[in-house]
Picture (spheres, rainbow, N blue to C red):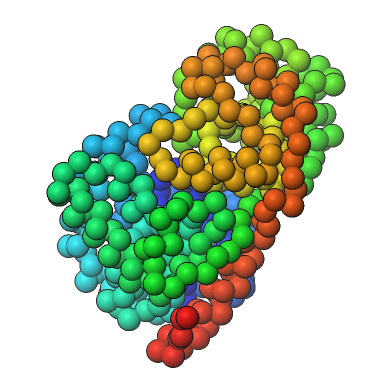
Length: 368
């Protein structure tokens, strides 16, 4: 039995969520990952798990010049070209699945692999909190756009099962004939604040100041780093490359400081909102300071969940970019967080369900 996991290359949140599920799967279950996400990300998240990664593109997510701006027309035009290519390689993808002995296809969250699995006679599962149908239907301008979006929905409807996480968009479940709800998939870190403080002191960081984790998304944001340098009572860490050295910002090495451990160790996370950052903060009890996100309907579901949890502080886009963070940083020290707002064991719940399905004779599988 073999599981083939298709992962969108839109940002890295989907790949990180997928990695947590794979980590929870039985170690002897062969897993193939097809995605444009760099192999190094899976290696970082799964250092003790052998998987096969094969670069393949079946969707494009959204076309973006930065981490919060979406080019809607360009997005649909880009996906239209990919959809045409998908149609031309359908037979080849079916041969790939059958030739590799795949017994279960999982998607987070391209729709085309679901069609390929259906044609191949292989069960398929979508594991997600939103679909590209949910996102793209807001961008429709022409009858051709509507036909494209309808095709995505039709492909999703071929799924055997959808495992839909908390923080779902309102129309997600409507795409699927069979749905099961699952908890959040979150990376839970180990608090290593003492060790991190010691390391930062070796980088000339004063003792006793607060620690913020910066994440500006895959596409980045043009932050005013000169203003950041004036906040000398805060030390900031990031894993993103900086445009220039910033006195009070340290770039960490992921191999020495696992991301989830840093989230758990920080006093606040200053970031853009995505499923990954949201579940990182909820799972580790770390307040989030963020800017709005336009034209991406998942954002509304995420901030509703963050409000239920209690730990978010929103800045305007102008204030965030200009690094006028101080009022939010001060407010983050007194937020009231509800640690019981959400379960965060979704990776294990999803993994158990997938392992059970992959082990069964797919000709006898029943989905209710």
